[in-house]
Image (cartoon, rainbow, N blue to C red; front, side):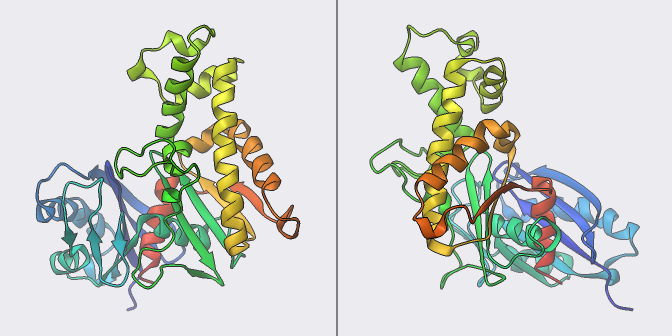
Length: 317
């Protein structure tokens, strides 16, 4: 009997999400574990094995599985290795696909986590009918996946498409993990929104703001959003500025690959039109006429975690 299921694993900087997925893209079982709880990657894989084994037994055991797909930061689709991921505890080059395959006894494939989410969107989300699109994840960082002619762009070494680390403000805000100055991620992530809030509150001490009711360690993109909804001027300026940065970046990306749509997902998209309206405005203003009013900016219809699990599992089918 043909295998019916695949396992999708999404390794994030904080949390690893995983699930059992059928061929129609339904996640039948899912769970999560901390990504950085274990000093050694072998112990991390053992924790995955302990969690996934009973989930696999529920649907008939290992013989019903075609394989395992993994999305991970700095995941190399060619070698199956995680390479120098700055936000993971295991340093250097980690042969994770090989280690997981040996532990589970199932064929295992790996790709970049953002690319896995793009594959999930293409197979099961709002871009099922599209062959040219870009996904942008606006979370703690900024991830991206580029699809051209129905294929994920991975480059000669497996690391193409790191749009979050493109420089949008040369010499600008320093990115704490990479040391780069002025990258998109340092502005248009949840972390970037917090940094913008701190900068504005510090630069204009005379201006009143609901944000001043919070201690520095309580400032988050969520608190900025809540204050913006109450009409706070500085909070609204933060989203206007973030949308400007993001829109200018998207204009560059559009003129690179001419996508049909740009799909946004991640926690920051909960800001809705507070972010979307300035983003669209500044994207259109920075496009050549031949590109204007052609590219849709849409929010993903999939949960962020679901997209990543689905996309990882899709590597196997």
